[in-house]
Image 1 (tube, rainbow, N blue to C red):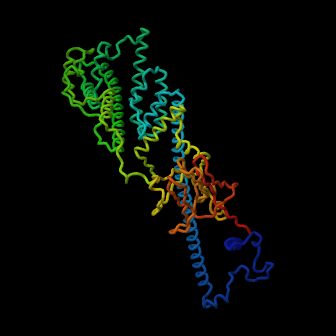
Image 2: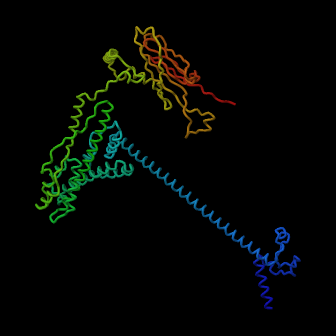
Length: 573
C-alpha cells in the first residue's frame, strides 16, 4: 500500500508538471472517458519523427532530446524577456530625455517671457515718467531716468549733473527715491548699474546729512560727537571738493591702509566716518566725469556731422602738486599729536587734473560760436539731392520782400503758400499710404518760352496706396497673423502750380509706356510756362475712373490733383 501511494503521488506530480488540472487528476489508463490505454504515457508523433529522420531513436534518447529542446526554448524565452526589458528601459530613458528637453524648452520660454515682462514693466515705468514730466509733476526718479535715457539718444542733451536733482528734497522724498532706484536696477537687469549705485550712495549720504541736521536742531542725539568734529568737518569737505576720482581713490586707499595698520592712538571712529563721507564724494566725482564724457562725445558727433574739426571739449589743465595744506593730515582731528604724525606718514601728495566747471564750459561754447565753427557747411551742386528746389539769391530776396509786404498789410505770418499747399495735400492721409517721389528724368525736352521765362520744376506731394489682396490663393496660404505681401492699389498725385503765367490753362497728364519694363508706365504732367514737365514711374494696370472708387482729376487753388485706384478683378465661376 505504501509503494502504491508513493507511485500515485509520483504520477500526480508528473501530471501537474504536464499541466493537468484538478478535473483530470483521477484519470488512469484504464479509467478515462477517452478510451485511451496509453493516457499516462508520453505521446510520440511517429510521422514527425520519420520526417525528421529520427524514428530509430529509443524512448530514452527521445526524452533527452526533448529535454534539450525544452532547455533551449527556456533560454530563448529568457533572451526574449531580457530584450523586452531592455526595450522597455530604453523607452523609459527616451521618455525621460524628452521630458527633460520639454522642461528645458519650457524653462527657456518662461525665461524669455520673464525678460519680456521685465522689459514691459521697464517701458511702462519710462512711459509713466514721461507723462509725469510732461504734466509738470515729475518725481526725482523721472528726471534720473530721463537723464540716463538721454545718453543713448544722439539728439538729447542734459547739461546738469544728475545729483543736482536732489537739491531741495526732503528725507521722505529721498527715501522714496532710494526705493525707486532699486526698482529700476531690478528692471534694467544690470544695465547702468554703476550709475544707479552711485546715485544710491549720494542719496543715502544726503539722507544722513538731513537727519543729522534735524537731530541737531532738536538738541537731541545730534549734539553728541559723530566721528568728525563740527569744527573739522568744513575743512575736510574743502579738501574733498574739486578733486578728481583718481585723487579721491588715492585718498581712500591711504585711509584704508591707515585703518588696517592700526595703532595705540588711532581714532577708528574718526577715520571710518571720513571713509563714509569720501564714498559719497567719489560717487559724485564718477558721475561728474561720466557726465563730461557724454557731453564730449555728443559734441564730437555734432562737429563731425557739420564737418568741423573736433577739439577737446574739456581741455586738461595741469597744475602743480597740491600744497601740504590740502592734505587730510593737516586737518585738525579728534586724535592727538602722535596720531597727526602717523597721518603724515600714511598719505602723500596727489597730483591731478583740474575739472572745468559749468561756467567755463558755457564760456567756451560761446567762444566757439563766435569763432564761426557752428556755421553750416557749403554744399556743391553734385551733393544736392535729386529733388532739391534751388532758388537764386535774387528770387529769394524778391520772395522775402513780397512776404514782408504781405505781413505789413495783413499782419498774419502763420503759414506760407507752400505750407498751405502741403497741408492740403496731406489731408486724409491714412496709415496704408506712404509718400511717393520716384521722379523720372526727362531728357531732350526743349521749351519755346525758355528764353522768356526761366524753366523750373513744380513742387509735388504724392502718395501711394498699398494694401493686401485677399484672393483665393492668398486666403489659402496666408492669414492675418502672417499676411501676404502688400501690392500697389492706387496713387494720389498733388502737383503745385502757384505761379502759372496763363491761369486759364489747365494742366494735363499723359500716360506713356515704359520701354524697358512693360509692368510699369510713365505718367507725365504738363502745365505751361514757367513750369517744366514732370514725370513719375508707376505700376501699369487698368485705372478705375469712377468717382465712387476715389477717382479725382481737378485743378483748383494752384494744385493739380490726380487721384485714382486700380481695378480689382473678381474671379467668378
